[in-house]
Image (tube, rainbow, N blue to C red; front, side):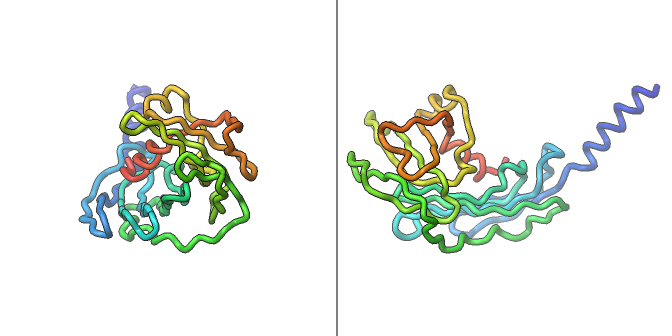
Amino acid sequence: MHLLTLICGIVLLSKAHTLRCYECVGLSGTCQDKTIECPSSSQQCAALHLTIYAGSILTEVKTKGCALAQECVNASINNGISKTIITSECCNSELCNDQFAPVPSKSIANGKKCFQCNGKDCTATLNCEGTEDHCISTKVTTRGESITLKGCASKVMCAPESTTMAGAAGTEISCCQGNYCNSASSTSAGLLLLVTPLVSLVALS
Protein backbone atom coordinates (compact mmCIF):
# COMPACT_ATOMS: atom_id res chain seq x y z
CA MET A 1 0.00 0.00 0.00
CA HIS A 2 2.82 2.38 0.90
CA LEU A 3 4.59 1.57 -2.39
CA LEU A 4 1.44 2.35 -4.40
CA THR A 5 1.05 5.67 -2.56
CA LEU A 6 4.68 6.56 -3.29
CA ILE A 7 4.33 5.75 -7.00
CA CYS A 8 1.12 7.80 -7.30
CA GLY A 9 2.80 10.68 -5.46
CA ILE A 10 5.77 10.67 -7.82
CA VAL A 11 3.50 10.64 -10.89
CA LEU A 12 1.33 13.46 -9.58
CA LEU A 13 4.34 15.50 -8.46
CA SER A 14 5.92 15.22 -11.90
CA LYS A 15 2.67 16.24 -13.55
CA ALA A 16 2.31 19.25 -11.25
CA HIS A 17 5.69 20.61 -12.34
CA THR A 18 4.97 20.35 -16.08
CA LEU A 19 4.58 23.83 -17.52
CA ARG A 20 2.02 25.17 -19.94
CA CYS A 21 3.62 27.39 -22.58
CA TYR A 22 2.70 29.32 -25.68
CA GLU A 23 3.69 27.66 -28.96
CA CYS A 24 3.98 29.05 -32.46
CA VAL A 25 6.31 29.16 -35.45
CA GLY A 26 6.22 32.10 -37.80
CA LEU A 27 8.18 33.70 -40.63
CA SER A 28 8.92 37.43 -40.69
CA GLY A 29 7.34 38.10 -37.31
CA THR A 30 3.92 36.51 -37.88
CA CYS A 31 3.07 33.90 -35.25
CA GLN A 32 -0.31 32.67 -33.96
CA ASP A 33 -0.04 31.51 -30.35
CA LYS A 34 -1.60 28.34 -29.03
CA THR A 35 -1.23 26.78 -25.58
CA ILE A 36 0.62 23.50 -25.08
CA GLU A 37 1.71 21.43 -22.10
CA CYS A 38 5.40 20.57 -22.03
CA PRO A 39 5.96 16.80 -22.27
CA SER A 40 8.70 16.86 -19.62
CA SER A 41 9.12 18.58 -16.26
CA SER A 42 12.70 19.39 -17.25
CA GLN A 43 11.52 21.69 -20.04
CA GLN A 44 10.96 25.42 -19.77
CA CYS A 45 8.90 27.91 -21.72
CA ALA A 46 10.98 29.50 -24.46
CA ALA A 47 10.97 32.06 -27.23
CA LEU A 48 13.53 32.03 -30.01
CA HIS A 49 14.49 34.39 -32.82
CA LEU A 50 16.55 32.97 -35.69
CA THR A 51 17.91 35.36 -38.30
CA ILE A 52 19.89 34.38 -41.39
CA TYR A 53 21.81 37.17 -43.08
CA ALA A 54 23.25 37.18 -46.59
CA GLY A 55 24.13 40.82 -46.99
CA SER A 56 20.73 41.96 -45.76
CA ILE A 57 18.22 39.85 -43.82
CA LEU A 58 17.39 36.76 -45.84
CA THR A 59 15.21 34.81 -43.45
CA GLU A 60 13.72 35.60 -40.06
CA VAL A 61 11.93 32.99 -37.92
CA LYS A 62 10.26 33.56 -34.55
CA THR A 63 9.16 30.61 -32.45
CA LYS A 64 7.73 29.83 -29.05
CA GLY A 65 7.38 26.51 -27.25
CA CYS A 66 9.01 24.19 -24.72
CA ALA A 67 12.78 23.75 -24.52
CA LEU A 68 15.48 22.18 -22.40
CA ALA A 69 17.86 24.53 -20.61
CA GLN A 70 20.70 23.72 -23.03
CA GLU A 71 18.52 24.79 -25.97
CA CYS A 72 18.17 28.30 -24.56
CA VAL A 73 21.19 29.85 -26.21
CA ASN A 74 22.42 33.04 -27.80
CA ALA A 75 24.85 32.13 -30.53
CA SER A 76 25.89 32.67 -34.13
CA ILE A 77 27.60 30.95 -37.05
CA ASN A 78 29.31 32.94 -39.78
CA ASN A 79 31.00 31.66 -42.95
CA GLY A 80 31.55 35.05 -44.52
CA ILE A 81 28.85 34.52 -47.14
CA SER A 82 25.99 34.12 -44.69
CA LYS A 83 25.52 34.46 -40.95
CA THR A 84 22.95 32.78 -38.71
CA ILE A 85 22.17 34.39 -35.36
CA ILE A 86 20.10 32.76 -32.63
CA THR A 87 18.67 34.71 -29.70
CA SER A 88 16.45 33.08 -27.11
CA GLU A 89 14.79 33.65 -23.77
CA CYS A 90 13.55 30.94 -21.38
CA CYS A 91 11.45 31.15 -18.23
CA ASN A 92 10.01 28.80 -15.60
CA SER A 93 6.44 29.93 -14.95
CA GLU A 94 3.08 29.24 -16.57
CA LEU A 95 2.67 30.84 -20.01
CA CYS A 96 5.62 33.13 -19.34
CA ASN A 97 6.81 33.13 -22.97
CA ASP A 98 4.17 35.58 -24.15
CA GLN A 99 6.80 37.85 -25.71
CA PHE A 100 9.10 37.09 -28.65
CA ALA A 101 12.85 36.77 -28.14
CA PRO A 102 14.66 40.03 -28.90
CA VAL A 103 16.01 40.88 -32.32
CA PRO A 104 19.79 40.30 -32.32
CA SER A 105 21.84 43.39 -31.61
CA LYS A 106 24.58 44.49 -33.98
CA SER A 107 27.72 42.42 -33.43
CA ILE A 108 31.20 43.89 -33.36
CA ALA A 109 34.53 42.20 -34.12
CA ASN A 110 35.98 40.43 -31.08
CA GLY A 111 39.59 40.01 -32.26
CA LYS A 112 39.23 36.31 -33.16
CA LYS A 113 40.28 35.49 -36.76
CA CYS A 114 39.44 32.41 -38.83
CA PHE A 115 39.82 31.32 -42.43
CA GLN A 116 36.88 31.65 -44.80
CA CYS A 117 36.36 30.27 -48.31
CA ASN A 118 35.78 32.19 -51.50
CA GLY A 119 34.94 29.43 -53.91
CA LYS A 120 37.73 26.87 -53.62
CA ASP A 121 40.15 29.37 -52.13
CA CYS A 122 39.98 29.05 -48.32
CA THR A 123 42.79 31.43 -47.35
CA ALA A 124 40.79 34.62 -46.80
CA THR A 125 40.49 36.09 -43.29
CA LEU A 126 37.14 36.34 -41.51
CA ASN A 127 36.89 38.57 -38.45
CA CYS A 128 34.70 36.85 -35.87
CA GLU A 129 32.02 38.87 -34.12
CA GLY A 130 30.14 38.81 -30.82
CA THR A 131 30.31 35.42 -29.08
CA GLU A 132 32.00 33.65 -32.02
CA ASP A 133 35.05 32.21 -30.25
CA HIS A 134 35.66 29.07 -32.35
CA CYS A 135 36.71 28.49 -35.95
CA ILE A 136 34.76 25.96 -38.01
CA SER A 137 35.37 23.93 -41.12
CA THR A 138 32.42 22.29 -42.84
CA LYS A 139 31.99 20.04 -45.85
CA VAL A 140 28.53 19.86 -47.38
CA THR A 141 27.56 17.70 -50.33
CA THR A 142 25.07 19.33 -52.68
CA ARG A 143 24.09 18.01 -56.12
CA GLY A 144 26.85 15.45 -55.87
CA GLU A 145 29.52 18.09 -55.31
CA SER A 146 31.44 18.55 -52.05
CA ILE A 147 31.65 22.17 -50.92
CA THR A 148 33.94 23.42 -48.17
CA LEU A 149 32.85 26.27 -45.90
CA LYS A 150 34.99 27.82 -43.18
CA GLY A 151 34.25 30.54 -40.67
CA CYS A 152 33.43 31.45 -37.08
CA ALA A 153 31.01 30.00 -34.53
CA SER A 154 29.99 30.44 -30.91
CA LYS A 155 31.21 27.77 -28.49
CA VAL A 156 27.68 26.51 -27.79
CA MET A 157 27.37 25.43 -31.43
CA CYS A 158 30.46 23.26 -31.10
CA ALA A 159 29.14 20.63 -28.68
CA PRO A 160 30.66 17.20 -29.43
CA GLU A 161 28.43 14.86 -31.44
CA SER A 162 29.05 11.36 -32.68
CA THR A 163 30.66 10.86 -36.09
CA THR A 164 27.83 8.48 -36.91
CA MET A 165 25.24 11.23 -36.52
CA ALA A 166 27.35 13.70 -38.47
CA GLY A 167 27.68 11.19 -41.30
CA ALA A 168 23.94 10.62 -41.28
CA ALA A 169 23.42 14.33 -41.86
CA GLY A 170 25.78 14.24 -44.83
CA THR A 171 27.92 16.90 -43.19
CA GLU A 172 31.49 16.84 -41.89
CA ILE A 173 32.09 19.58 -39.36
CA SER A 174 34.99 20.41 -37.06
CA CYS A 175 35.45 23.16 -34.49
CA CYS A 176 38.69 24.44 -33.01
CA GLN A 177 40.09 27.29 -30.91
CA GLY A 178 42.91 29.61 -31.82
CA ASN A 179 43.30 32.11 -34.64
CA TYR A 180 43.30 30.51 -38.10
CA CYS A 181 43.05 27.01 -36.58
CA ASN A 182 40.57 25.92 -39.30
CA SER A 183 43.19 25.57 -42.01
CA ALA A 184 43.33 22.52 -44.27
CA SER A 185 45.81 20.85 -41.94
CA SER A 186 43.91 21.49 -38.70
CA THR A 187 42.19 18.71 -36.81
CA SER A 188 39.54 18.68 -34.14
CA ALA A 189 38.18 16.05 -31.80
CA GLY A 190 34.84 17.82 -31.62
CA LEU A 191 32.31 17.09 -34.33
CA LEU A 192 28.89 18.64 -34.33
CA LEU A 193 25.76 18.67 -36.36
CA LEU A 194 25.30 22.17 -37.70
CA VAL A 195 21.84 21.60 -39.09
CA THR A 196 20.36 19.48 -36.31
CA PRO A 197 20.90 21.97 -33.45
CA LEU A 198 19.36 24.75 -35.55
CA VAL A 199 16.34 22.64 -36.47
CA SER A 200 16.00 21.53 -32.85
CA LEU A 201 16.17 25.10 -31.61
CA VAL A 202 13.70 26.35 -34.19
CA ALA A 203 11.27 23.57 -33.34
CA LEU A 204 11.83 24.11 -29.61
CA SER A 205 10.64 20.58 -29.05
